[in-house]
Amino acid sequence: MKLTLIGNGIMAQSLAKGLIKNHEVEIIGRDAQKLKAIQEKMPQITIKILEENENITGKNIIFCVKPYALQSVSARLTGTCNILLSILAGTKLETLKKQIQAKHYIRTMPNVAASVQNSMTTITGDNEAKLVAMEIFASIGQAIWVNTEDQLDIATAVAGSGPAFLALIAEALTDGAVKEGLDRHLSAQLVQGLFSGTASLLKHSHPAVIKDSVMSPGGTTAAGYAELEKAGVRSAMMNAIEAAHKKANELGKK
Image 1 (spheres, rainbow, N blue to C red):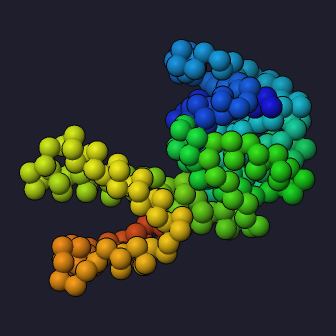
Image 2 (image 1 turned 120 degrees about the horizontal axis):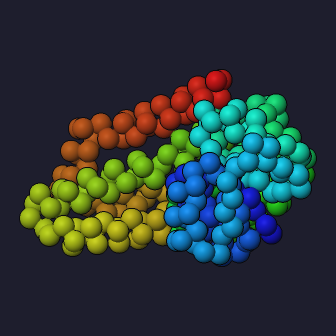
């Protein structure tokens, strides 16, 4: 399938890197220098500067610009695309329908792990395009269909913003090991393995079961866990999801 990505930012590049393994990919953007750099990294991609009257008729579009750029970019699009797959956080289907002409509309929220074909993508929109949308995003990781846009906005806070939250935890764990005297390259390697192994466990076990299996009475894990609770890490994570969800709703109202 030929896919046209409109936008040349980090998410567009991450998606393109994953999608080129199974699809023909075209990137249309406004930054010629960025587009040239993208093609140097991924020569199999077709690049194109966004024209004043860019005809999107019949194309399968993945819309990858920032939410604030929706109006300025959509004003330059003409014709009716086949499917519009938007990754714009908080931007409602109703808003997309007013800005861009398409036969079918889909909202998605992938994450940067798309670049290594391991994105966790949430999808909603027109049921007529559900199978196509699921196929596209399943090719770069896991894809989940939700029935409402509010569910997708909550998912945005978890799977969309989540890599940044987990990266903060990974960095903190690495720094903690360095603080105690372990070489940084060893600390980083340990944390990478920790995240990979724990992800595998989460496929089969509830987080509480994993925690209880590690935390023995009076042991090292219990001592460290008590400090996490004292610092309010659990509450902070829950508040982070709430704040990200609230921001997604705010973006949708603009």
